[in-house]
Image (cartoon, rainbow, N blue to C red; front, side, top):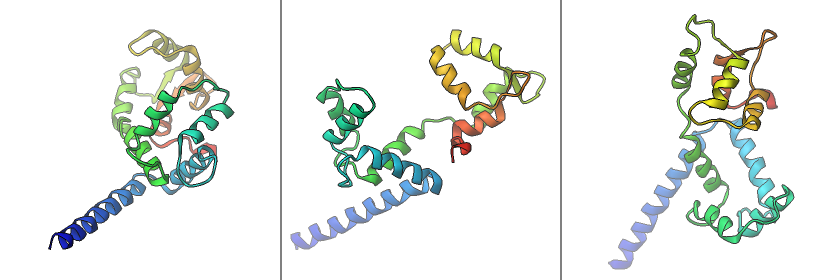
Length: 174
């Protein structure tokens, strides 16, 4: 009887795991999943389907960071709570990206800087705010953001398009 219950438990656990992993895929659009697959493939240096410490070390090395401490790599791997296959990798990103505010909240924040409701904010004024207020951006972070930000010839940011990019990604990357 005990072995029968154990078998039932493991079947139930397997079903929960399957349900959990299938929900991960529904969190993203197909194009996003493809981009994550490409990233996973770049990190999975030995192509065994699992990201290991040596995979991470090699990836960082290729990016020019040669002095990664084993403790840092171990901490990264612990986030997966087990072997990091593609489904776990996707779930980790899903957890991180769920922290992004909804598009409407971000739009409402921009509207505070657009009292006339034009849908635009001045790039230079916005840059000054990013560099000096609240969670200050570095000049490099501002330039990274402006690289994907829709800015017209008059130097105005189309913040509705920017909000879409923040919440959905830059569609122009294809």
